[in-house]
Length: 169
Image (cartoon, rainbow, N blue to C red; front, side):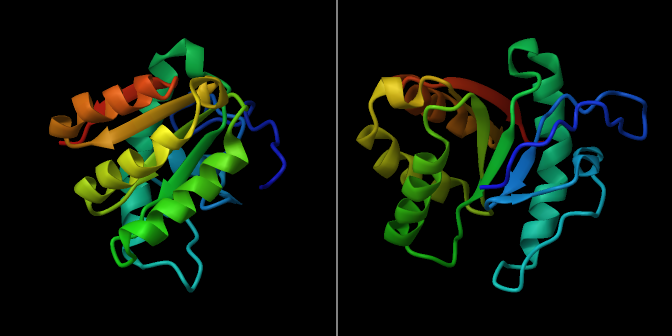
């Protein structure tokens, strides 16, 4: 996991403070400018090409939520990719490793995938494995289909996490 750098003095092209200390994608730090939808999201050779479009499409909405909720300002945002090309079991193992790396830290995390039902099923498999105290400092941010919002909110709150949501139109 990269060491957090204070990126809060950075400004986006509209003059607004970014309001985040760090943003990671699959454990790699990303530049703060990606929050304005810039094409600076770097993907590795083992990641699918559509990941860039997914991230650049979702980050401006995530930034909107984070700026509107003062409680979340300054917290790191960690994106976790749930890969539709992998099995539920493989995605669950990867999510468990990811949560283990950020549990007991104050942070916002956002699952992303081209398959919304896979997000739901992966979270349903993994989140009940943790106690509420382990996840109490985390905020689950979901940007996506509004039909999943109540289910994901229930999973988050039952796991001791706060929940934030923005519909994807």
